[in-house]
Structure formats: C-alpha cells, structure tokens
Amino acid sequence: MPAISHANEFEGTNMKTIVSIGVVLIFVALAGIAQQQVAVEQQSSSETAPKVPYRIVGTMSQLMVDIIFPTSDDLFYIVRKPPSNDAEWGAIERSALTLAESANLLLMPGRARDQDKWIADARLLLDAGNLAFKAAKAKDYDAIVALNEQLVTACTTCHQDYRPNYRRRR
Ligand code: HEC
Image (cartoon, rainbow, N blue to C red; front, side, top):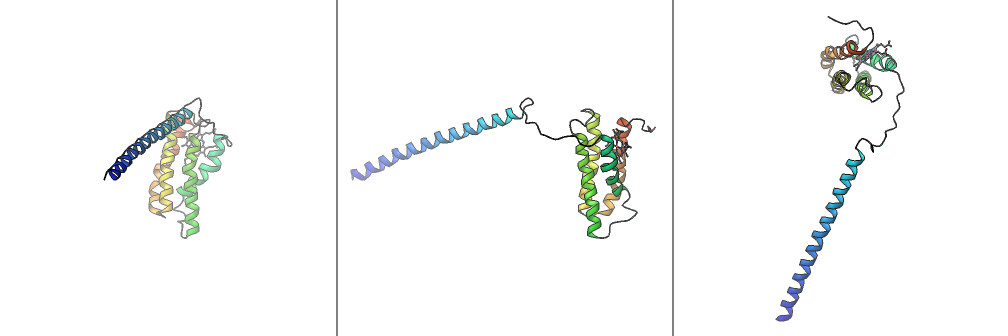
C-alpha cells in the first residue's frame, strides 16, 4: 500500500519540520528573555537606576522625639500596664511595627551618616524592632519584656557613636 506509506513519510517530514520550527521558536523566545534580563540589569546599574521620589520630611531629632522615643517607650513600659485585650495588643503591635520600620528611615540615603558604623547601629534597632513586632503579633508578653535590653542597647550604641554630647559609658 504505497499510498499509505507515502502519507506516513509525508507526515514524518511534516513532523520534523514542525519540531524544528518549534526548536527555533524556543531559541528565539529564550534569546528574547535573555535580552530582557540584560535590559533590567542595565537599568538597575547606578547611572540608569530609576530615581525613587522619596523626600526627607522630618529631621533626625524629630524622628527620635516623635516616632522612635514614644513607640519604644510603649515597649519599654509594657510592664506598667500589660495589654489585656485585643485593642491594647493592637496598640503594642502598631508601636513595634512603627519602631522597626523607623530603623529603615534611619538607613535611607540622606539620613545615614555613613555607610559603615551607622548602618550597623541602625540594624540593631531594625533587628530588635522586628523581633518585638513578631512578639507583639503573637501577643507574647514575656518575649517583649525579654527584648527590652536588646532594644536599649540599640538606642545607646548609636547614641554613643553619633549623638552629640551623649554621655559616654565607660
Ligand atoms: C542609628 C542611630 C540611632 C539609633 C538606633 C537611635 N538613635 Fe536616637 N538619636 C540619634 C542621633 C544622631 C541623635 C541626635 C539628633 C540630633 O540632635 O540632631 C539622636 C537623638 C535622640 C533623642 C534626643 C532628640 C532631641 O533632639 O531631643 C532621643 C530622645 C532619642 N534619640 C531616642 C532614641 C531611642 C529611644 C532610640 C532607641 C529605641 C534611639 N534614639 C535610637 C541616633 C540614633
């Protein structure tokens, strides 16, 4: 039955063509993806990096007095009035979140005093704040009390390094 075998042969050739076109298309697609990746990498290199339009609003002193001081106090003095309901826990959670995120504000270009010790000091606050936020979400009173010392250290370390006229500890 030559007709059938011819048809099979024809189909076979067709399949091969389709497969090779498919392979070519895959290569083209991959090349496109590779090019896109290069473009993204180039974009994020320093000169072409898109400028994020953030703006420094508060001074360092205002951040300390209006954001960092009151929110850390809420955690330091949790022992005076331990939260006893969801609303009170919610307040503690907000303070811990605000405090933790305020460390990111300290890390912003324009605020960071240098790229070395300042970054390390601010990260102490970021770490302590982050742990406090987790503890607050879990309504873990003991964990927050236990974090107090780490939190105080975060404040005093940076103050010793960068706050003018701050009493140096011996
Ligand atoms: C990464 C550095 C850094 C960390 C962390 C930090 N501070 Fe400060 N703080 C400063 C600097 C710098 C000043 C001085 C600001 C100024 O006078 O311009 C300051 C000043 C202050 C002041 C005095 C502000 C004024 O003008 O009267 C208070 C209060 C304060 N900090 C509280 C805290 C507390 C509480 C913490 C921890 C929960 C903390 N800070 C963590 C850098 C830091």
